[in-house]
Amino acid sequence: MDKKLIIPDRRDMYLAIGMVLCGFFFWECGLISYESSIGKAVFTIVICGVSGSYLYANGLRQSKKSLISLALMAVLGISFILFSGRTEHAVTLPVLAALYLYWVALTCGQTMDGKLSLYVLGDMLKQGGVIPFVNYETCPIVIVKSSKGKGGKSILLVVVGIAIAIPLVITALILLSAADESFNMLVGKVLNQISWRWLEYLAEFILGIPLAFYLFGQAYGNVKGDKQETMNKKSLSKFARALAKFPPLIGTTILACLNVIYIAFLGVQITHVVKGLPKDMSYSEFARQGFFQLCDVVVLNLVLVIAIGLLYKRKGRAKKLVRIQMALMSLLTIGITFTALAKMFMYIDVYGLTQLRIYTSVFMAFLVIVFLSIGVYQFKHFNIGMLICIAGLVILIAFNYAGVDRTIAKYNISRFEKGSLGMMDEKLMYSLGDGATPELYKFWKKTGDAKVAEVLEGLPADSGWCSWSVERELANRARDKYRKEK
Image 1 (tube, helix red, strand yellow):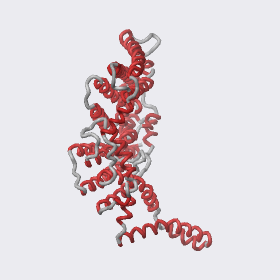
Image 2 (cartoon, one colour):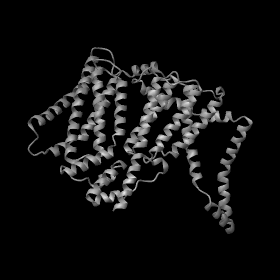
Image 3 (cartoon, helix red, strand yellow):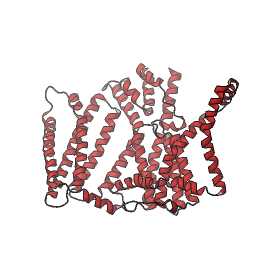
Image 4 (spheres, helix red, strand yellow):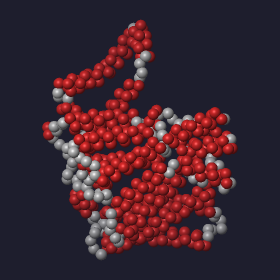
C-alpha cells in the first residue's frame, strides 16, 4: 500500500488513540496471566467499544449475523467474570479473539462467504494474519500525519522529547549520585516519596504498541485500507482444487487398510461386552488400559480424513470408493470414541473425577459430532462448517459455565461420603481451582480433615484487580471462614 494515499481523518486518529489504549489494557488487564478473570472481560469490552465506535462512525451498521457474533463474545466474556478456571480461560481466549476478528469482518462485509461455512478458516487466515500485517504501518502513519497541525505537532514533539530524556535522566542521576554522597541521599529521599507504579504503566504502554498497530491494521484495513481482495472465496477454492492431485486409489487403499484394523479392534471390544473380560483382568484394569492411546488414534484419523479429503482428485470412479472408505472410517472412529468414553466412565466410577478426565471426555464428545458430520457429508452435502462451528461453540459455552473444578470436588466428596470412593489426594485438591474451595470448606467443616485444612491454608496468587471473579470471591470468603473457625 502506498503511504502517500493514506489521508487520515479525525476518526482514524481516534481509532489510533483507542487502539494504543487497547494495547496498554492488554497488559494492564493481564490477558497473558492465567489468574486474570475480570481483566479479560474488561479488555473485551474496551476493544469492542473502540472498534464498534469506529465502524459506526464510518457508516457501518450491525447486521443480524454480526450481532450474533457480538452476543457470543458477551456470553464468553461474562464467563470470565463468573469463573476463574485456568484451562477454560486458556481455551476460550483464542476463540474469543477469532470471534472478534470475524465480527469486524462481518460488520464490514468482508467475509469470504455470505454464511458461516468452512470458508471461516480462510477468513481467520485473512483477518488474523493478512489484513492486520498488510496494514500494520498505517497506525504510526496516521498518528504522524494527524499531528502535523500546530497543536498536534507540539504534543508529539513533547512526547518524543520525554521518551528520549528518560534514559538520559536516569543515567545522569546514577552518575551524579555516585559522585556526591549528599546528592545521593537527596535523590534517595525523593525516590522514596515517588510511587514506581508509573514505570509499570510506561512498560505496559510500550509493550502494547505492537499490538495496537496490529489491531488498528485489522479494523482500518477492513474499512479503508488494503483488504487484499485477491484473497477471496474464489481464490481459496481454486487453491483447494490445485492441491487435489492425490490419486484417489491410494487414499482408498490407506483408508481400507486402517479400517480393517479398526473393525478387528471393535470386534474384540464387543467380545468383552458379550462374553466378559478375561479372568485375570478386573474392570478397573480394563478401564485404565489404553484410553489415551485411543484418543491418539481418533486424532490421527481426523488428520488423515482431512488430509485425504483435501488432496485426492475429484475425478474418476475411485472417488466414490474414497468417500465410502471415509464414511466407514468415520463410523469406525465413532465406535472407537465410544469405546474410549466407556473406558473413561468406568475409570471415573472406580477412581473419581479429575480435570484431565473431564477435558478429554468433552473433547472426545466433540469429535463424535465432527466424525458424524464427516461421515454424512460423504453422501449428502450440507454446510458442515456451520454445524461443526455451532457445535464447538455450544460445547465451549457449556464447558465454561459448568464450573469444572466445583463439579469435580462435589462429585468426589459425595462419592467419598457414600463410601464408594476414596478421598481425593492432596495433589488433586491443590490442582483444583477456586471453584472447588467452597466445597472443600464444607467438607472440612463436617470432618475437620487435616489434608483439606492444608489446602484451605493456601491463597491464590494476587494479580490485582484483574484477577477478581465471582468464583474467586466465593473461594476467598470460604478461606476467611476457615481461618476464623479453625
